[in-house]
Length: 382
Image (cartoon, rainbow, N blue to C red; front, side, top):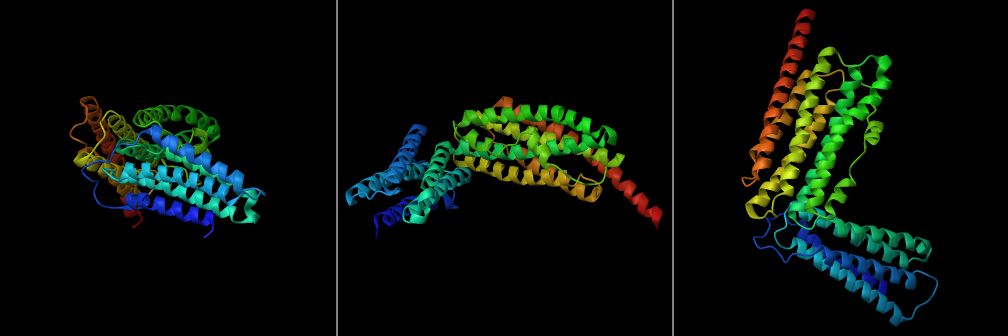
């Protein structure tokens, strides 16, 4: 086997235990592995990029290095890659929950694939011009390794922040729908500009709060979540629908639903703030937080379904079903909160519960009225 192919096989063997540990479905072990410092991970990832760059300079050009020179640079790359794998394995070999395994596995798999593609290009003369690009991709994957969550708390925080961003987008979408339906058609252009500015202000402030809390949990985890965000103009550009104009009853329903989605976002942000003040979860506490992540993902889907059902013409029964899913999902989350939440955050979530219940009751009242109106129209037609 030639040295480059041997190195490729070594990389795969070295990363395999990491990926296996990340893909296991059993409960986290009671005893955590030795913690890995961010500095150690940064040093290992930086060192790997340096050694890969040396390999590219020596073997990626037209020069013919000696066998000993090629062996030397490839061995150095192997050692650096093995160091990265060892640190990643230490991170997930102990009390790592599903969120930490998912983030670590994705980062490790991305690095392995980038390194394998780079080594393949060295063995293919026709791809010589792509070698610098492949080195750049490895650099990106090394950066992803550095920014990957370092513990369960950071990994859960990243997951919750991603979910909150998606719900924030849904809130902005329904807000734009309400604003566009609440003004005459001749004023739509002007109103859209005002609503984008005014409607985004609260959501942007909430987004900044989530970003700050995530930053407190992990030096790099917030950057991972931030990469999935959108600014106001991005969302406005994407939300182009040709649905029918809302009737007065449908507009009232959309306005009530907007408040429900807003309270859902407030609940998610309150969870993120609470998590940022908690110690690293383990045992039953970790299981509780991971269960909350699962329910929050389901709630994100339900919130998006609710917003999608608000475009005209509305089907009151479909909106009611989506609203019920949102309220049920929210209640599951609020019922499963960790018992040891700080008092301030526990009170904040109780306040959100009260406001969410009020918003849900208002939406249900609007839907009941809409259903009565539909039934009356059907009776009249008969």
